[in-house]
Image (tube, rainbow, N blue to C red; front, side, top):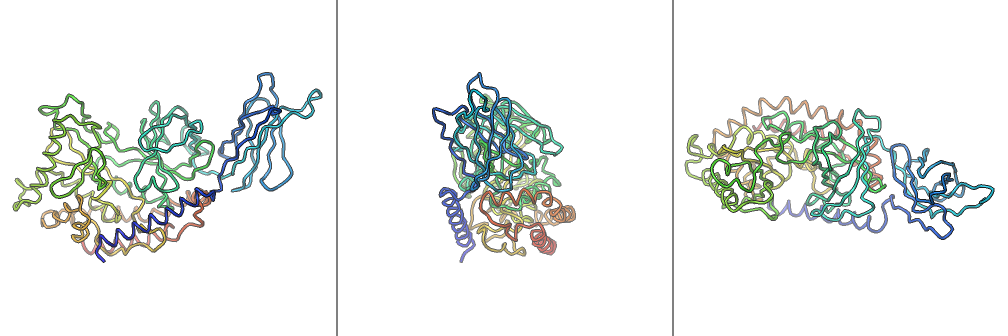
Length: 511
């Protein structure tokens, strides 16, 4: 079987596994099904809403203005005895629930001599999950998030839940994101805050991504790989922090809150293009690109088959569009010319070698599955002839990768990104790497840079168990929420570390 056929077969099996999981969710196998209140004409409290919060369930409801005191009841589903409390106002916090158990909640006006048996609200059902990480709650008024294109309005709160983070709240817009990941049961999201905010201690921004990491139950692969990327010459690597997400009152599991890749002084710090930037130096940048095999709107194919998506600017003026084509073709022409290795006239004139070498080393060491095929970013600053590689992205299927979700990881002692057979069969910008390794100067640059990075990279591998340890309670809850059972063995930090040490030994012997 060719490498391409083998990879296609693996991806087909992934889709099959995920399709089964999606059917299970649709069939009601999730333990987080909300109940529907059945208010009637006698109800003295209506529209009971139950939201999971750190340590319990927060209830709110509607009622007549003249009613100020309410009785709140709850019981575990399947039992007959209600617990009860009386509160003033239209909200209550119920605590003391059993992990993973479903509870019924109901509310009515507090009994009085004049009204000894006020009418109950309909019963609302919610499942309790004990949260140990910071909690992000998003409320869209129950409007479902079903599109990667259209935002839904909502509001968020961030509860530090004991962590050293700032409590925040505000309005936002939220939509789906991702490609393969959007087809998985646990959905990733993109959020745009109404005003800039420093989520979980990261620099203020309006633009954030909530990674679901459905394929990475370890919840550490992206954190570890981005830490390695931050050790390189790439100026910025997306920062992130772990949290638990509650969406419209329902627990969604562990999410990675990560900075979105975009042109911004705190992120990709290059000039932002305007529609009028169509002549002279202004036309030369900045442009943010992504290698993406999916041929999405705005993408183009280079003569060698690399599929490049222009991420920013969002819309290109005709002059900008033509300029982008010209610089991509100029780079490829130099890379595949007979004198491609010439230091003055070859490809090196059009690419920043340091960032390219570092991007390759991080991708190869982590065996980033889609490196130089998808989710590979590079940019062109204004007034600079060269493409600069980075920031790095998409590591959920890396570091002991398995795209099957059911089998052992791939062998650690094999070339991936620089493998000519894989590169030429996959196509995309991976053909660039195969050509680059025909240049002895590039090979030497990779070797020398590996000598500088190998010890910091290994130290990061040794820190993986320290990263995962505090997350284990939340990872366990996430597995229950998504019917994943126990953590699969290759998602334990110790097993990832073993694979990565073997990978390090192979890299050290071959670079």
